[in-house]
Length: 437
Image: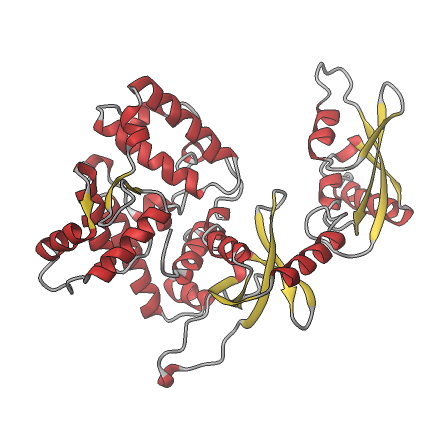
């Protein structure tokens, strides 16, 4: 994963993918809260990322940035915007050094001293030569993310690339593994790590003479491509949760027009930030399938339980750790408040009773199947051959309401009465739209 933040690129690509060509350069820069010069510079950097990532491919397999951002219903299996993760946003010298280390360890086992000598010989003339401490730090990082292995227990340690699984697989086994990873990456949340593994398998298949495009037997369609961008924050947040650390960040509310705010490093151009600097103890991450949104929920020192849309988080940094007892206490309090949350709501609990109507003249009861699959802890009671009751106690009704509304005429609200009246008013309004003119 990336060692450096790339908040600006994330917000930049989100706007390009959602707005397409709707805005001019100046309008796009204004919405992002950056100058036109920074807009152009960021666009050039993204184009360079695409070029570098595809430098090993034949010309006919290369892809322009415009192709990455062009919507295609049948090509969503290779997800939009993922190349930011492939690029890793590493410093240039760090990227060159890690590439040399990984390349050297593909063919034979080597010690840190061997790798330091190799880097000293092969690093570009204008790049600083790494010392042994730097090489050991790189090896520790690569070992932690699982791409290399330590092969002995005594010093000097020797390392090799972690290719044993791939090398031992037959062609048929590799194709089966690729299909499995392809399905899981496209159907599970989070998915970025799965896509990165799929790319690695695709490269191995290409080396063995297979055409990866011919092996892609599945196609997928998602309504929310940009959810992948929010996964950039997940691993930092999960790391803070695992280490029981607070995090600091700048929050840009998605409800406001500003999508990005630059870090004011030049006093001549300093301006007031459009976001809010905040600090919380992260406790839970929630994904809302209804709207394709990630949420961060944590404990705020002054306001208690607080929730944030992940897409508004920028400049995330780990803070000081807290005691295990304090963390456990805060987590139990959150779980108690979210016991009846449909998604993230922590307001008072309301009992909702609904009558569902089974479809007539259909072999499959898709209404019942959907309620059973999506109804969470709600209780289903048989009423008649044509109807069944569904009851659930949920925190407020604002998060469950869109789900109930999506059933249309197959759903009748019974309780609470005020919610029933709301639905009646909504359907009357809809009916008025279709009255004869």
